[in-house]
Image (cartoon, rainbow, N blue to C red; front, side):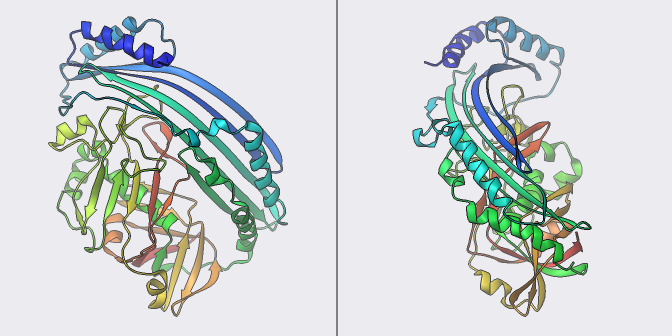
Length: 458
């Protein structure tokens, strides 16, 4: 047994002595490394290791939580969480019933980034940075590589003992160009569940990214207005994650009366071809796992099926509050935080339309790709595309400056009139919520076509 497995075994015996409604504990050890270039210079190379744990106790409807990086006095930590829970013991917290689970999920030995020497990781980052700076006209650039391997052990007072290992890799690259008057940028973000090979052969994409940043300086700006817009899998995946996925997180729904009315199960949100899924049980992606941080087995949850709202994302607590079933979406970014409802792998399922068929009938429209960022407020959203092209008479035409898409998510979902057959998953970046960021997730979609989309020039 590892150090934290031995500690977890000790804790599982101690919690049996206490009269609380429910107690759970997490113990975690992780190793990570990071390499970054800013402009032409190497900015940092670092590695770190952390170990710690937390205790969460429920007493008469109230939660107590404590986290720590000293694993010596488990009795004190458990008593601390119980005493905190007693201070708010008149709360209304309930949990859906769960069966005890004993399991061990090992890391795939071929997907451990720490089998790759740090020097090799640095060399790859350096190669990409050199490629970026082969392009004249750049102002600055970013190359940021990160990886981690984490082992966690979850125990609870009903007898669960779950040990899980996972690896994660991300790389983000950005080129910023200027002509002295204007500034434009282009970027790439990707990652994997520990497979270093997935990020090794991006050389041609990096060159294209740098060239694109410079080319955008001369690109015209689209006239603002209403267009038929085609989104690529990256931008469509970000849209479904940010604009709809967060609205499907049950803690958000439960706490907001207006949203409960908007997000009634059975409500029609799109055509019968529209299916939106979230699930950690989808294998091999950055948001995949076998058990969430409450020990609930991962699932595949249809949020929208055949155009109608059919599900939402739950922890054991939100499922009990709303009379539904947990979906395995209780997640924390580390032992320092309690689990909250989070997405995993969120995507639109593929349809039957080819890309050529999708653009064929568009007299004048816009093809939007990649993304810079965006904001959401309830059902309203604003997203910036990373690059865009005019569509003229059914063909992709000239590149234009990045555009901004604005609208109401529910109206936009209803305006999706074609869904491609080319699902692709974006595994770059991470999700933020409740001060916990960046949580490994993935999102994706096939190409989608949206009618009556409001477009502004960036």
